Each structure stands twice: as C-alpha cells, then as structure tokens.
Image 1 (tube, rainbow, N blue to C red):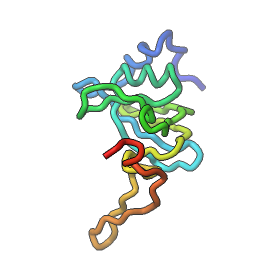
Image 2: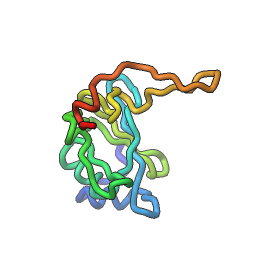
Image 3: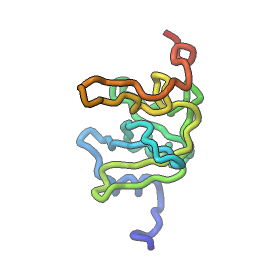
Image 4: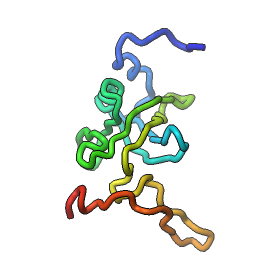
Amino acid sequence: MNDTPPYKSWSEFASKLSWTADGLIPAIVQDQQTGEVLMMAWMNEEALVETLKSGQTHFYSRSRGRQWHKGGTSGHVQHVREIRLDCDADVLLILVDQVGGACHEGYRSCFFRVLNQDGILETHGERVFAPEKVYGK
C-alpha cells in the first residue's frame, strides 16, 4: 500500500523530510543482505538528491564542509538498494550492497569496536583493506 502519490521530483521528496536546523539528516547505512550496520553519516539535500540520482551513496562532511561520494577515493562504493524513513521522517536508513569496506580505518563496518563488560573497547573483525595504501599517510 502506498502512503503518498509519486513525487514529481527528488527535491519534492526531500522537502517532506525533517531536517536539522543546519539542513542535515542522519543516514544509517546497512548491508541489505546481512543486516550489518556499516556506518552513519550526514546528508544535506544535495547529497540525498545525488544519491537518489546516481544509485550510490553521497554524504555531507561536517568537518570538511562539503559533499563526498562514498568510495570516490577508495573504490569502496555503496550501491543503494532501498531507502527507508523512520516514523518522524528525521532519520534515513539506507540499505546497500557494499563494495569492500565501509570504514575509512579499513574495516567492513565503522562499528568494529565493542565495549566489553570490563569497560574495555575490543576490536572485532579483520581489516578488509589497508587504509594507508588507499588514502596515504
């Protein structure tokens, strides 16, 4: 069952979202086959529209103040399979097919650290690529 008629443009769809005061929306990226949460990043309207048009994820870097294409440097792109909204339309869940690792530290997921019962952070998983070879030092 469809809740809304088709949107006339991606910008019209974006206008229905609840953006933060600085024009961003959090996007959680999840592997569509395994359900593993790969990363969280921010999108502005431009990044969302580019994601919808290209079929690969694009985000907004708050620290660099600019757009970025996930995998644009590393080749570890994310092919978008589905975009979901939470009930308040203020968080996106993006289901993807991940090529290589999602984490800039070389892991498949950015959530590779686990806090154990003793309060110690443990690394879970193996690196899938060497970040220094991809990004330099």
